[in-house]
Amino acid sequence: MKILASIVALLSVSAMAAAPSTTAAASPTADLVVAFDTLHAEKAMDANLWKMIQSDKKKAQQRSREKSPFKTEGRDIAGTVNVSFISFSPFRFIADGLLRVSGGKETSMREDAATLSDMAKDSGFEVTKSGGKKTPVYSFDMKAVPDDDGDEGMPVNGAVLSVIDDSQARFTARWGIGPEEAEAWKNERAAKDGEQPLAEALAATPIANSALAIVGNAERLAEIPLDENEEQKSLKELLVQLTTLSIVFRVEGGDLRIVANLIFKEEAMATARRTEFAQDCEQFRTVMAAQGGSMLRTVTAGGEGRTVTVDAAVDLRAAWGLVSRFENAGRKRTKKSPRK
Image 1: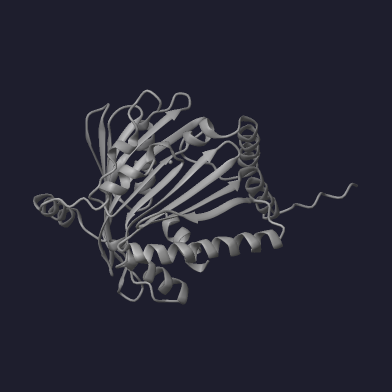
Image 2: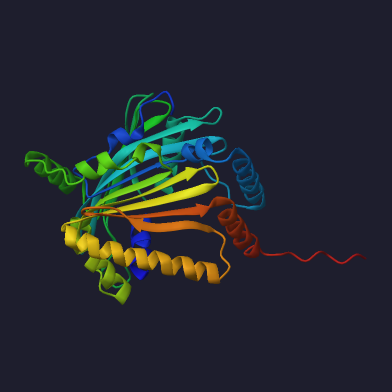
């Protein structure tokens, strides 16, 4: 059961009708692909439940004193992010992808990019604007900032945001690597015979019809230093046994469906793990039932061959009720002034 929880934690470290899906930008050569679409929930959720959640969110926004610098009312965002890890110690990566916004009134991706540019300047980034008036390109650069002891506190990082039109933008981002080094790394990788470790996993995962989908190269993720506690060591042991993994979050009426697929290197190991996961799922159901939990509808483990599948369904109405209770409990109550 600890392994199941660790998988969810790792993968979560982690959102148009007429236009092509942003998932077309998913790269099979990446180490990790994350696709999201906030419009999916509205289209797939029970209508009454959707209205209730939106009403609660609107009330929470009215109570909050914090306001987003972006115009978010009535808008949705979909995107695909491809991440390639250069090293884990030190932690360095390069990411790229495609974003698309829809809905809202008198808003555009150009306005969003300009707002992001202002925020970046306030945060200490050097911002350069190029491109045309309708298709601006913003480059954000941050040099390494040492900490009080003289060691590297904030590593060198940056991004490029290229506006395509009113609703779309492409981006690249880097962490722990300078722009010249990043360009050299990409050219070197492109020159090699391209391996596509995520090709089969992406083809088998419904990333275009999900609220959130994550597909990863487990052999690469197994290089992450995980040895601080027993849970991390167990997760590391599992990753070493896999080739790829994926997890998909999809709304179905009143349920949130969560499906994880683990592809093992050896069928014998998959068979053993399938039995172990099935026992974990049964134990988890028993514990939840004993605690009076009504949020989890089902959780099962199955699959065949080298594949192990964990499939769970969560009652969205019960889950939202729990979130709302936490949100209300965290609010500071103000005492009414006594009447004079």
